Length: 185
Image (tube, rainbow, N blue to C red; front, side, top):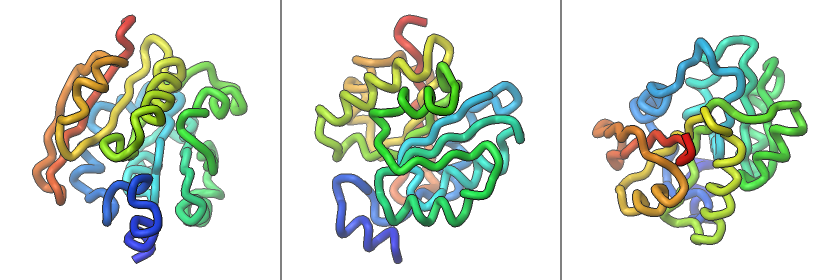
């Protein structure tokens, strides 16, 4: 119910009336090489649908940085994951990802996972987030996000090379997982 309440308060920032399902969460994890990842960042973890899988699958020494702008969700994340080693919960903005990486002593993230609703975000906000993401993932990192349609595909292609589309029909609504890398790679 808290997810629905937060959606009603901030529909452009939350983007959905319910958290992502388990099938979509597992699909978002498929492109991640958990054996080699040193730093994983998650934008907009909300109530932790993807975070649950990231925490369960990551190596103990892999750092997980969760960036959530919603104060209510940030408190929930702190209650669930705040005592875990190498899990850093930040009440802040995805566009500041480089600052957060630097604060924890990292040059880049190996993977950046996003649950942000790019379709409903203002274009200038999306631009700031994706520009910061390019720098934060360096040459070899991967950006993984999901969308309910491919309407923003060309927008993402202005920033990244899309290397794969994964479709998850067992989500309501069905979703596309987009896997992207730096255009310079």
